Structure formats: structure tokens, C-alpha cells
Length: 431
Image (tube, rainbow, N blue to C red; front, top):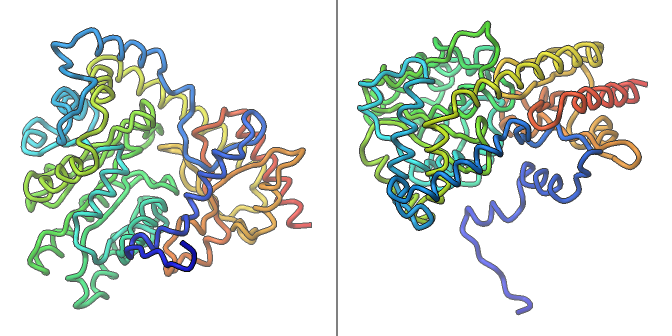
């Protein structure tokens, strides 16, 4: 009916306008010319890393063994498939450094309704509104979601070892009485967008700082460590990332993990590992409210793969991304070196984060416009740095000269071609 207003909740009103990431994903799905345009932006995994044949075998195994995989095509329980939980526990003992049987046995493991992001979204739903402590730059999709939920971000700059804990302590002290409004910490162990790997010393320091804050405000302040890319630390010179769950004497540390990067994003398997109690109970209820569980047959397929071919799959995936990282870094330095100030990433996951000395990269810049124009030349899509930093943070100005380049989705030859197009665009901007 004309003239009548539509009322939305505060969250709904903030969500009515699509976020930058929402717009970019929609444009990619709608207008991307396969085989011609080049995606260095949307963080899809490389198609060759997805073990399609194994999925067929997994489906046949699940469908053919109803005794083990009970009612696999029916609804599942909100905590997750018992098979998958068992398989994940065994997987974590093999692949997560610092994890031992006693620590793992003392923690509860639950499966989210739709990937790791659904776990993070659920965390934001069950925690009281307030201040979310995170890094800057940060995981822009989740940070945008937190802002729409009404959280205030305390975004702390990072360096090559991840979130700077010296600045974290300084910023928490500066909060004064508002420190009691800190709802939780959110820290990626391998940064998206910068690719920086949180050092083991920094992990322990983050946990210690959160524990100290918990004692000061007389309540537990959770720390969520996002392990999305932790199984993709492919630089052999880096020490293995260490879990800090064994050092968590206060019951505040949680780990969020996913199978998206090592198997396939479409599995939508995300999990939460941490101390049992009211928070975990609330997360399970949140999964139930969202639709009972993640699709049970998919959970059972994931369990089958974790029990069998996963170790070889991880080796193949990491070798593939390592080879790409080395080739792409060399191309970046050769083609874009005259304009570059710094480059981070390339040791884990599949991102490089570029900072230019003077060249602007934001969506209104000439550089972005040239690469997004398309036509007879391929469109080259990247994530502008302005999407990745806190809106009111101190990195806002420098982010106008930054971009995230993904070497995940495209084949190496296409990425090298795209870097060449970037060089041409940079030259046109400098002319």
C-alpha cells in the first residue's frame, strides 16, 4: 500500500543497505565473465583444491552404511553429528600443535548451522552488546556484521606478527570505566586480509590480557581465536601455530574452525571448541533456532573424509598454495615494485596485502576504475583496503593506498596476467 512506512529493527535498518562485501559478491556472481575477467578479490578457494572425486566416494559411503551414518538424510541434532565431532577431535589431535588428549577431552566441541561464519554470527547474537576487541585491518565481513549488530569496535593495529599486544594493553587502559563494556575479543590467527600469522607469543599475550581484563571487570570476557586459515600455513620457515587452550585456566578461550579452506566452502562446516557451560549451551540453542543443524548428510560426508583421505588432501592443498604464493610474490615485486611501499602475506592462507607509496586504490580511484572497467580488457577484481579497516580507526587514510590480492581462486598464469594489468593501470595513473 502506497504511503505506508516499513518498520525494521535496529539491525534490520542497518542491514537494509548492502555492505561493500555484499555488493562485491553480488557483482561477482552477476557480471563475472568466466575465463576472461580475473578474480583477485572474492576469497574463493582454487577449484583444483576441491576433491570432487572424494565427495562422490563420501556420499556413496554415507548412503551405503545406514548403521554407521544413521538417518543421514533426515534432521540432525543441534550439537552436531556425533560422527563428525569424533572425527574432528581425532583430526585436531593430529593437526593442531599444542593440543593434547587431556586438553581436548576437557573442552566441548559443537558444529555450527552453516559454516564458521554462522558460528561467529551466533556468538555476536548471544553475547551482550558492547565493545568487540579485534585487529585492524580485520575480517571485514564479520566486522561489518558486528557493527550492524550494534557493537562498537576497538580495532587494534597489527604488524607482521599479528595484533599488536602492546597497543592492545594501551587501548584497554584508555577505555577507563568503559572497559566493563568489552563483550569479547575476536582474533584471526592468520589474518584476512593481511595474511599476517599471529605469533605464538602474541597468542599467549592476548589470552593473558583477556584474563587480566576478566579479573578487573569481575566476569569472564571470552577470546575467540578464528582458525579459518590455520591449516594453510604453507611457509616451511614459520613455526607451527600453537593452540593456547591448554593454558586457559579461566575458561575464556574458544576456537572457531572450518573445513572450507582445506575441503570445500560449500560443505558449510564450521565448529566451536571451548569450555563447556552456559555460553556453549546458548550456542547450541542458537543452532537449533537456525534450523536444527547443518545438513546431516554433509556432516557425515565430512566425517568420512576426516577419517580417511584428509591428511593427503591437506598436503596437496598446501603445496599448491605455496607454489602460487612464491610465483605471485615474485611477480608483485617485479611488476609493481616501483609503486610499492610494503607487502605482507604469502606465508599462510592465500592473500597478499599491498600498500602503495602514493597510488590510491579505493573504489573512487582512477586505478580501481581502470581495472574494473572491463570491455575489451579483462576486469581485475581486488578488495580495496578501505573495506578492511575500522571506519573510525587510525588506518583509514593509509587504507586508501592498500588492497588485498587473493591468489586462491585463479590459476597462477591468470594471476600473473592480472598483476601485469595492475602495472599498466599504475602506469596510467602515474602518467
